[in-house]
Structures are given as structure tokens and as C-alpha cells.
Length: 98
Image 1 (cartoon, one colour):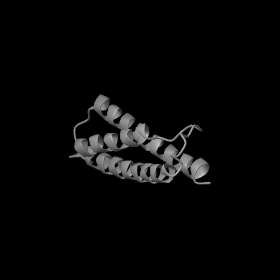
Image 2 (cartoon, one colour):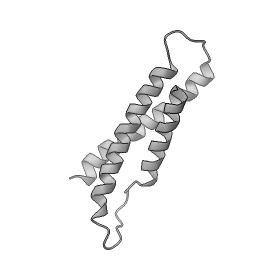
Image 3 (cartoon, helix red, strand yellow):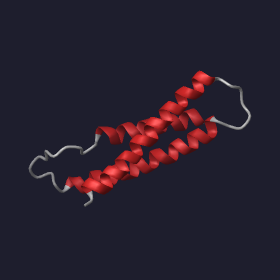
């Protein structure tokens, strides 16, 4: 179940990553869509953080066999997802909403 939640977190992260409004160029007539994209990205970043927390909790129970390579790979994936989601939340707060 933890693997499934981690996969769902990757999908949610990738979807918001591909919709990222980074950059200054805006096509004419699409300014009204910016708010919707910002709300979607914020909710996706929060959802990714929640899914990563649940996946980490399920993938690392207190008593389980030790497989360092597997553990490091999972920790790396979770770290990338969490750090980029936090970056998105901070970036949205600083540059888009103000």
C-alpha cells in the first residue's frame, strides 16, 4: 500500500510540475487562468506532501528487514517530492500571490 501511495504522490507531483507557471510570458487573454493554475498547484503540492508522509509511514514500519539500497532509493524519491513541493508552495506565496 505504501508503494501505491508513493506512486500516487509521484503522479500528483508530476502533474503539477508540468502545469508550472514559472516564467514571465503570458499569452493574451489567458491572465484569468493564472488564479486557477495557482490554486491547482497549491492543492497538488499539499496533496503530494500528505501522500509522501503516508507512504513513508507505511514503507518504513519499525520492524522490517534491512535493505539499504531500497531504503535509500525510497528516501531519495520522497526527498525530491517533498523539497520540490515545499519550493512550489514558497514560490507561489512569494511571487505569484503578491
